[in-house]
Image 1: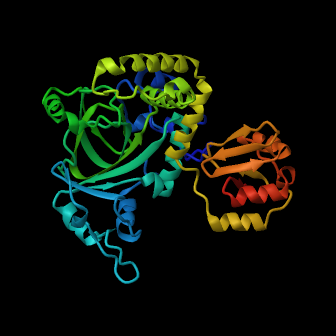
Image 2 (image 1 turned 45 degrees about the vertical axis):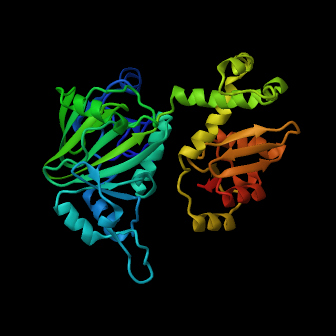
Image 3 (image 1 turned 45 degrees about the horizontal axis):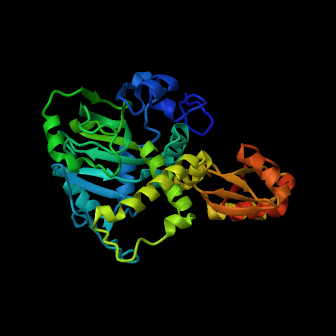
Length: 413
């Protein structure tokens, strides 16, 4: 029987409902022993339920044949390489003559010949995965994306490689044999893709694997970034969903720290001063003195930067990395027109909202839906909404409530 829990994720426990559907250990053990460190295989009988509510073969057929899907929402791979878009796209006919729409006829032939279908960005396309991925991102504190891989019998979609993001592999239909090898570069950054280390990857793939597992429907495999992997379909057609976790990392903190330091350094007139007239910037001796002054001032600035300044920059990164929960324009307009003082109003889910107060008491509500200026009285009520409150439209003020609905900041329960 399906259990309803906060966040709308069926079959899971409260607290971290999406994550609990993917791992067979408690969250604290996962965080301490596996997160970013080593793979975790969880069998279907260790999880609350299978993943058939999230995706299926029928969903694949619907997406490629009835939804007017366009590139880059679909890729096709064969023999370890990605095919050109022309191989699987065509114009959509009268009234929809866009040339890069997926051609279901071409896909049938390609799939029968052994090609793998890769449905991309399902966290933006398929309703069940939109909801699940947003809840998982909230559980993990890191942004996620979702792809699906559909492989014909006895075929391998991609050669051995590593990803620059963590992945959860959800086996949907059929069986796949996975070979996992130790990283050739632990915790690679996005700027360090596997093809820049192709020779090392190919050599490592010839060694005995760290893990050799067959994933069956309902199984889940967690792989930290950097672990080499390749999968081959067994028996019939297989479908798996890969949830990519684009983890925040210390390199990003270093980048944001340097950005803030450079902004502070620009306020220093000694740093802004021109180098000597006639200087040769090709001569290390001629720039050494200026470089040492800059180095000294830079180190001083870095030591003085408060964590709050870095967090302010990270908030922008976090808002840009994900979207707020889907919002229907017609539904919002209707809710605004039918608003009464008794209507219960909440912030839109996954809004990533914060309130910045000004010296005069006014405030700005910043979120993934943009920014909204608030009076001191309005800010006090909205601050309670940021922490989970749900005032009535009368408490909020009908004018402000309508403004928040039409700005996409709030929804009516």
